[in-house]
Amino acid sequence: MIPYGRQDISQDDIDAVIRVLHSEWLTQGPKVPEFEKAVANYCGAKHAVAVNSATSGLHIACMALDVGHGDVVWTSPNTFVASANCARYCGARVDFVDINPNTFNLCPVKLAEKLEEAKKSDRLPKVVIPVHLCGQSCDMAAIHALAKEYGFRIIEDASHAIGGRYQNQPVGSCRFSDITVFSFHPVKIITTAEGGMTITNDAELAARMARLRTHGIIKDLTQMHNPPVGPWYYEQLELGYNYRMTDLQAALGLSQLNRLDYYVSERNKIAKRYDELLSDFPVKRPHLIPAAYSSWHLYPIRVQLDHIKASHREVFEAMHKADIGVNLHYMPVHLQPYYRELGFEVGMFPAAESYGQDAISLPMYPNLNQDQQDHVVSVLKEALSQ
Image (cartoon, rainbow, N blue to C red; front, side):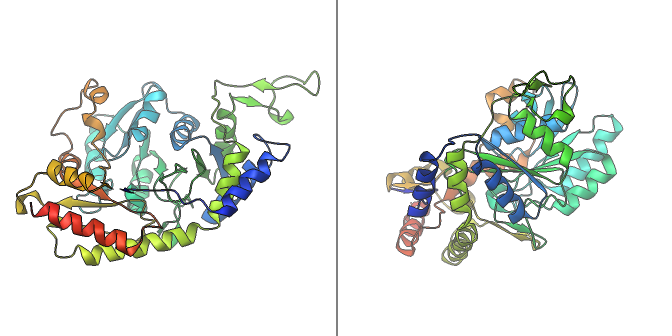
C-alpha cells in the first residue's frame, strides 16, 4: 500500500535512541534541552519548549496567554480538531474564520471583515490561531497587522510546517506571532514518534509553558513563594500537566533534524512533479502565496466534481481499492457533532465546507519514488474518468 504519509527512520536514528537507552537518563535528561536548543536555533527564535504532542503545545500556549472562561479564540475550520479544542480545554469559546479557497489557509480578508463586525459588538477574540495547512504559512504579516489593530495575540499552528519559510524567514521565527507550535507525529516532516514543541521569543511565555508541561512545578529558587526547607524542595505554582517529552523522543528528533532540509527539498520536488503530472486533470492544485516556501506535509487536490461523472466518495474509494491510502485533511471542525452542539451549522463557513466536499490528500513523503507517484497519478486519472 502507498500511504498518504510515512516516517523515514535511518540507522542514525536507531543508534541515537539506543545510546539514550544505554545512558543514565530516559526522560528529563540532557537530550530534551539539546533538542529544544537545536530547533530554536534552526528557527532563529530565542526559546523552545518540548512537549509530548502538538495538542499539548497548543493547550499550554493558550494557557500561557491566559486564555480562560469568557474569552474567545478564533481559528480555521479547515484543520484538525486540536486547533480548536485547545481553547475549549481552557474554558474559552471558539469561533472560526473561513479559508481562502485557493491556499486552503485562514483568509486574512475574511479575518479583517469578521474583526470589524466583532468590534461593533465587543466580541473580539483574545487569541487567533492561524493554521499553516499542508506546510504553507498563512499570510502572517497581514494577520499580525490586524493583531496590532485589534489587540489579539497570535499562536501559529505550524504542526505541518517545520522547515517551511515565510518572507525568507523560517516558520517558527515568531516574527509575526507570540508562539509557534510544531508537531513531530510520524507522518509529519520530522518525527519523535509522538511529540511537539512550542517556540517563542518571550522569556516569560517560555518559562510559563515549561512550568505548565510539568504539573505547574518549579525548582528555581528565585521564583519560589517560600524559603526552601531543604534540597528536595519544590513548589507547584499553578495547575499544570504532565506534557513532557522523553529523552528517547528528543534523541530521535535531534537525529531527524539533521535531515529536515533534505526532507523538505524532496517534498518540494514531489509537489512540483505532481503539479506537472496533474496539469491537465480536472482537479484544482494547491496555490502558494509568493511569500511562502512550503514544507509540503500534504499535497491536497480539489476534484472538480462538475467536470466529471464520479462523486468525491467514488474517486476516494477507487484510490483505496488500488491500495493508495489517500485521505481528507480535513473535515470542517465546526461540523463535528461536538461543535454542532455548541451552535455551529452548515453554511457558516462555506469555503471550508466546499473544500471538505471535494478535497483529497495524495501520497506525500520523501521516499515516494517516481514509479509510485506515476502509479498514484495513473489510478487517479482512471478514477476521475469512471
